[in-house]
Amino acid sequence: DIKGFVFDLDGVITDTAQFHTKAWSKLAQQLGVEWSDELQNGLKGLSRMDSLELILTTGGKENDYSATEKEKLATQKNDLYLQFVKTITPADIFPGIKEFLDELNQQGYLMSIASASKNAPTVLSKLELTDYFEHVVDPNTLTKGKPDPEIFIKAAEIIGLKPEQCIGLEDATAGISGINAANEVSLGVGSPAILTEADMVFEDTKEITLANIKAKMNS
Ligand code: G16
Ligand code: MG
Figure 1 (cartoon, rainbow, N blue to C red):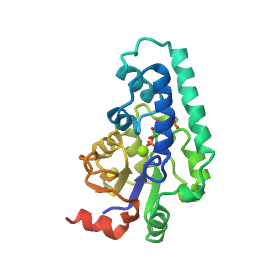
Figure 2: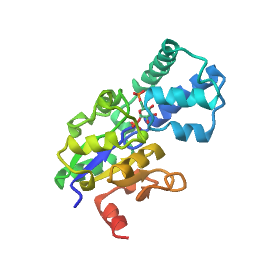
Figure 3: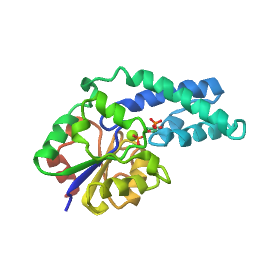
């Protein structure tokens, strides 16, 4: 039986995926790396350094920068990202998500955050959702990023559940792969044409309710 829900943050609870995209595409342009939908989707859910590596590899520039220079580029991206984060308010929570969290609380489900982002606590605080998520995986404790299942296994562990007792919510293909590899039920948020590996997909966050999830699990 399902007893808990493991949430990705960026792109599931709020549209910070858009801010990551803006900041990375600006850096890619500066580095002379061509931006594409494929690169944009591939970056979703990857850690900061894995994201930078993917951009450099895409442009054939993986050997052009020292470790120190890479750190500087990643910091530059994060500084711009944080400028966008400053503007976030509770009104930026995706439609229906707050209601869904309340429904989960009322029904006694456990919940945790499985975000690769080191900025997740700041974003949760801007959204005034800190009280909903007592349990957040610290990305600094991870040995491997998404698509590795580690973060999703830890997210179940910190609420005292087995992965099989959890549903994982994700907007990224890398995240859906991780949830599936962790043996959790994968719930994709976004386009079914992109999230083809997910056990179920919701295009609109307003549709994410316990009743709709149960209906999809039985179909
Ligand atoms: C998020 C975003 C990624 C971002 C990563 C690291 O992952 O989807 O685009 O690169 O966090 O973020 P930061 O640079 O803030 O540590 P998730 O797992 O929340 O989707
Ligand atoms: Mg995400």
